[in-house]
Amino acid sequence: MKKNRKERPVRTEYINPVYKDRVKVLETSASTGGLYSLGELEISPGGGNQLHVHKAFTETFTAIKGTLGVRREDESIYLSPGDSMTIPPGTPHHFFNASNEKIVCHVKFTPGHSGFEKGLAIGYGLAADGLTDKKGRPKKFTHLALVISLTDTRPSGFLGLLMPIFSWIAKKERKKGTEEMLLEKYYYQ
Image (cartoon, rainbow, N blue to C red; front, side):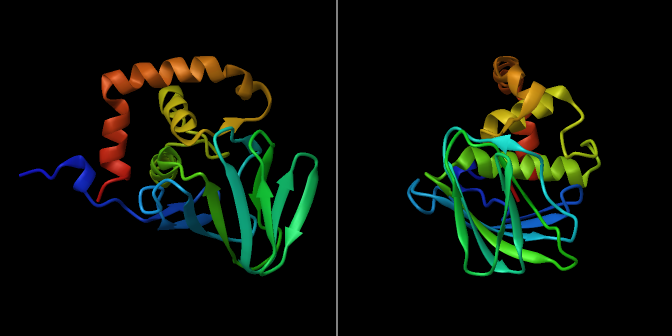
């Protein structure tokens, strides 16, 4: 008998070969009553993601091991172990590792965001399966729309102008069952 979806275990560790990182989910939005989501991020040398914006939550980076690079708008900031930086909603940012060693940091979303947790699993799963471009964006436009919608991760630049289209496509793909299919493949154990 198939377990009720809410009772099913979810994966807690994801690897993205494009971003050269590994994420371990330490606290989910559900486990904190929606207060926050918390993950541990390990970034290999040269790793990092693209400039983007979140509207639904703040994102706090805390360096644990090594020097974490965070670009906030036009400024690059380097965090040493113990240093933290919070990115307010609507602020363009991205993380990176400019060193020759792996770095570890904690990333906290306040309030918690279960959609981000699910979208992360899908995006990283697609990357691991070779279904993203060299910047980590899903090759299928429908998958890109779903990941953007789930994670509240809005690309900067031209792609950011397409948000109404991404939202419309994501809604359409949910009705078709595409999101559920991707969750079955990449999110649930």
